[in-house]
Image 1 (tube, rainbow, N blue to C red):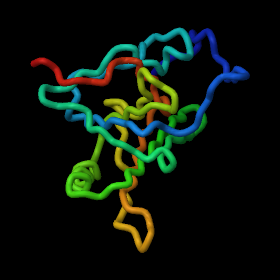
Image 2: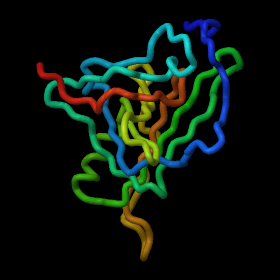
Image 3: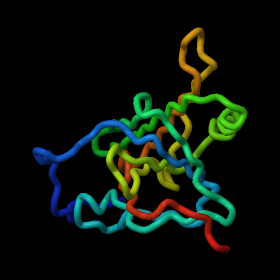
Image 4: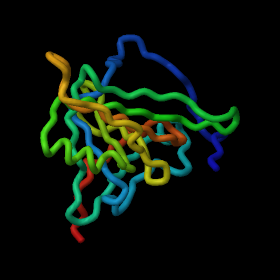
Amino acid sequence: MRNYSTVTNLGLVYTEGLENPSGIQEEAFLIPLSYLKTEAKPLADGLTAESLVTITTSHTLLPGKSPIPCTPMFEKSGSEFESVGEIGSALMDGKVTFFVPELSAKSLGSIVILKNFRGLVLFRRPGQTTGFWQVGSKGMPAKTQKITGGFGTGTGEVGHKLELKATDVSAAYEYTGELPVAAAN
């Protein structure tokens, strides 16, 4: 159990003129738990609010494994969060939705595997060029909640929507490490 009484800079502030775009970029990565060799984590004894949710080192993957790329459509993808649980023992539900406007044998085969996904989700906000936001952790992984899709009707939409959710201490983590790569051995 963490003791937050030592955190020195609490505050919910908005700086006028600061860029604060909505949505997520058209690039994301899924990392199944079974791919992880080591998981990077925030500092256990962080003294600032930021340190509680910032991961500054890099995850490493098992040999031969790499993150699963996802190319979601900006206009139909995003992330939301909400608190869940009782007062005094609340957690956060971090949710990510990806709409990928394509159906092929490769995408349908990937859905066969991802329908039971448990792991980490990395994505960027518009304008972000380094680091990622991460939903899920090894102890509290992101899980597939729902997959919908189809071939459309008439001029309707073709593709699939993947919805993932992780219940954790934080809705998301700022991951400033490198995109994980396979370990040498």
